[in-house]
Amino acid sequence: DFSYGDYGSAILYQSNGDAIFISMKDQMAPVIQETFFKSYRGRGDDTLKIVFSEPSFDNQNCGLIIEYKTASGDDVSLWQYSSYYWNVLHREAFFILDKELFTETTMTPKDSIRIKASCIMDSSRNQIPESTPFVALKGSYPIEIFTVNKATYFENSKKKNGRVFELDFLPFESLYPNDTAVGVALDVGGPEFETVIREELRLRYPSLEIGKDEKIDISKIKIVIKMCLFTSLGTYVASDEVSFKGSDSRLENRGKRVFFRWNFLSDDGRFVQTGVYLVDVDVRISYNGHAVYQTKDKENRMQSWGVLRR
Image (tube, rainbow, N blue to C red; front, side, top):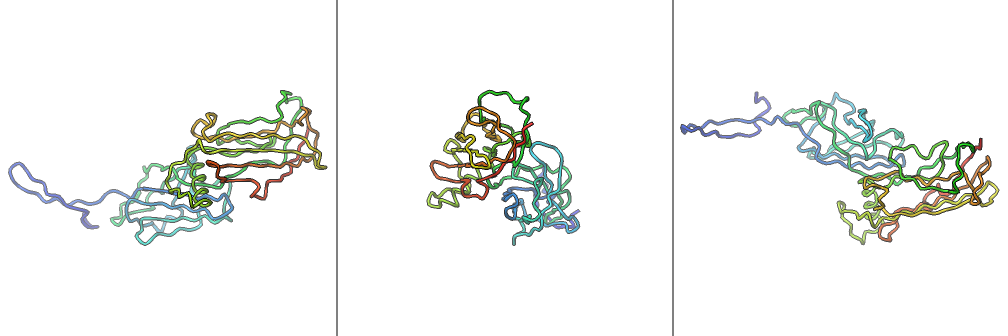
């Protein structure tokens, strides 16, 4: 069946000297060659760029066409983007998610994607099949600081070990902080984090002439986290500071959620009372001495945490 035209031709030479002309048809569907997902986590419009192996066209009857699954699960979801368009050559598609439609459960650069079956085809109408594998997303997202504004603790379940603060290196999917564990957390390490560092350096320090694909030396990344707590009346409670490098072995090369935990203790080792506490959160990230992130640039440096003692 060559109803869509010849893809190419070949001549088969047999041992008896006969030559047979053979027409060939392209039966391969387009595949994803490259992706880049810029996530703003609700602070701006998310954008996804997909480069296909050949000029491609969408099936107008498909509706949403991007399927994704998280790194930690097998459930497949449809990405609820707002709109998309093609470049002139129809090899690149650009998808946009309006910031007003952002939810905490939407796609992130840590996920993988594929095109929904039969929703993209080439000029020979070869459609993407059901068996298409998922492709890991490349991309970046804003550095996000995780905190909670209230928590409850039970004094009897807390062991007085003298440590007012602790630093934990946890899996990315860990739900810390939460309503029983307060502190400051951020996700450090992995290709997405390195992309963020590189993009911030390119934006802030163009004189460094860092290439868009240049390798980041993680040993040059330094993270500093400071916390200082006061009562609602301004009385000092506790403070501490930790620092570590991007090459820290506790990150295990893959990256971790780093949680700087406050154990509901004052500097003198006593459990605090029920009340509202003012917290000065200061997170700084630098690369080879060049600042790429500082909490003082953000609106949420000074926070108030409600504590309920049981």
